[in-house]
Length: 152
Image 1 (cartoon, rainbow, N blue to C red):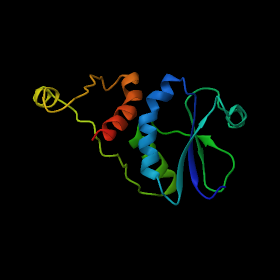
Image 2: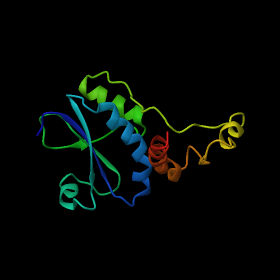
Image 3: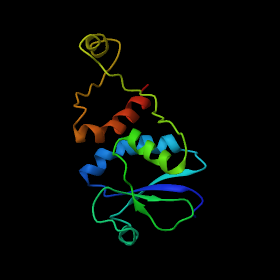
């Protein structure tokens, strides 16, 4: 309705780059959740093809910025990490919003903590071995986090 600035991600559910962006984009969404000036949204461009075409989407993910009061969008020119996206939005809106990460239910283990947690006979433990740079691991992170919260 034009009452807010809006950052929109046009994505495809099968897209690896979209899956890699998802955890970072979720943090941005959480950061601006309930904000009176900014909304963060996403559109499945494979289901909403006319809408994606109208906004010049030709690849995935595509991030578009809709300034308050305007019906046309511009290219998002910020980074693809949550901190960079929040800074970019702040620069355009005059806000000073800080990145708001959710508390992590997943425990990060090290060689000094692994045995005490993973081999605790009083608990059933699921351990994920991951690489921070791996797109598959990044895509799995929010699912793994939800699972950890469910069993916390």
